[in-house]
Image 1 (cartoon, one colour):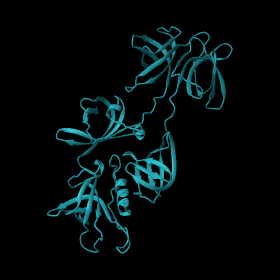
Image 2 (cartoon, helix red, strand yellow; image 1 turned 180 degrees about the horizontal axis):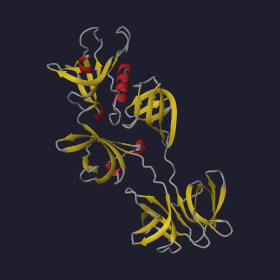
Image 3 (cartoon, helix red, strand yellow; image 1 turned 135 degrees about the horizontal axis):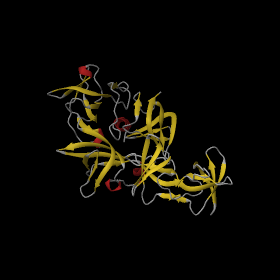
Length: 403
């Protein structure tokens, strides 16, 4: 590939991100050096405001910019080069024939449609996956996939990833077009799940049912707590007893109890919650380093419930009480899923732009439709990047700003 084609590929890739990123509303004109200098290219980017036939001649900025598109090949940047038709409202990048005339209409060689009128973005949780029917459903809508659908996400970096890898409740981001009365996915990205934090609740039991308990957390507030086969109930609580509840909220906001522990009335022994990293594990005691740096010994009994198979080095949450000797006795120990990403901020020079992936200095940066990109950065520009750093080193950008 010669330098002209490399430059073209980089420019088009930067404008055709994985989900047709929204571009800056200001039209831009880019011209290479004078024709006497080697390896030049020229381009115009903007939104079509009118189309004149025959020709066609396309108008940008309400006619202030005009381009002769008579001989141009028109391609979709978001559909891997698929040929499309020009329409008012499309965002386009026109690669111009060299040399560009000093006066008169510039002539387009290739026009890339980077934001199409016939595309829609859906983001939400999957409600169904139909492998025989080659489709999935979300937001009350069925979306079909075909051989041209591109699947993406962190899982796709190291191998094949497709419809059979998606599961109900997965959060996804889909770019789709229509064929007749059907939506066809162009690109599908599975988004990162964020673990739901544990939650504690203290109150008086007012009702006990097969699948739920009612807890009075204050004089005027009642909370319904869902129970199931995995819920551990300690101390044989009954209506009127004070209890401590440990659990997580489901998608509907209902607290699903992992533990319901009766709080003894005599002597009062309120439950305590500890959070830290496991230093050692023995049959009758664990050592845990709290976030404050303090090391504590946690007593283990036959009544202690341990979930998630925690091991040395794992972060855990521990609910327990103090005995008469002041020892902390664990009632439940829950392994906390390891954090999959960390917040990062850095500055660097854009070395490469290939579709949804940029290289800033030596860091691989993923750009999604949710990424805020300002200043129209290009290769060679210095940028400030904010985002989430994945375990393998890729930064999923939330903000990119040209410096």
